[in-house]
Length: 328
Image (cartoon, rainbow, N blue to C red; front, side):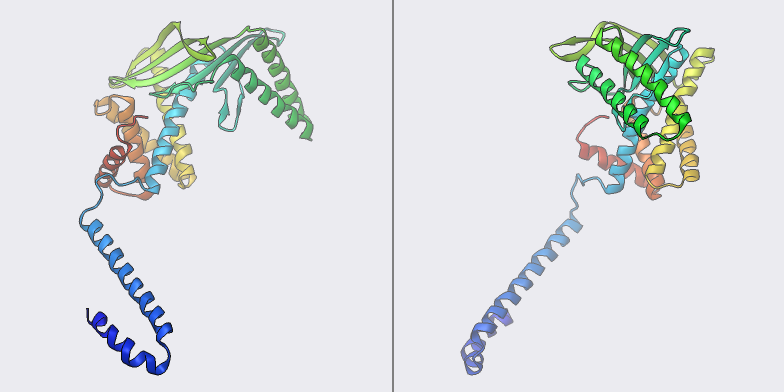
């Protein structure tokens, strides 16, 4: 207010004498604007310090932990699928180019080495679902073509004779697989893994195509159901029980390393988190996929930024409030 009252006197008496009125006038306006802007920003910070937003945006660390936990869940289904088919006598071909491609391309061969059976499998965990074009005949054929193209490029660039023989063998298998696909002589399955009511449930669905979209067919069956609060003693189920937690631990180790932990630290942390998860499931504190996901987010975040369990609970609560009910 004092500055404002002095402005007329400065304009009438001082500025005309020195011939600086235009320059000082512009400077005065600029200074006044800066002061007002500073006052507004200060008031803004004061208000938000006193009344923080109820649904804050997730931090960079939290987003990283959430992504890592989602990757763990995604890979649990794939690793488990591999174990199931390996036990059934199937051989898995490397069908992924980066993160894309067919989750599981399995074959059986005759004694002469000819591919006799082809099984194309997509794995999903929890609430994850097939995308619109995924597992359609065209999608499968295109992915097979991409894999063959990649192998041909590797073969052309290969200078190691031993590796060249291996690539040639893979190309032979893939070309036979492509022939099966072209003739429609292959099977498709959706392997769905979830935790529900404290139980690990693995279901295989036959797929049928309708209007260019793959859907679950009538022939679907529950292959395995294991009570995670009571470790099974029957040999086969006990093996699947171990496979499940082995898959969690291996993928946790991989994701924690990506989050910045050293290799030895990632392995130690993954082992610790997996044991804690087993205890939570046995005590029935965790009973479904969403609760397991929330637990993994919290634990990965704790390892990443070294926060306490109480802070982890608070941040986790804020995170899920922000997501507004979305389930992974």
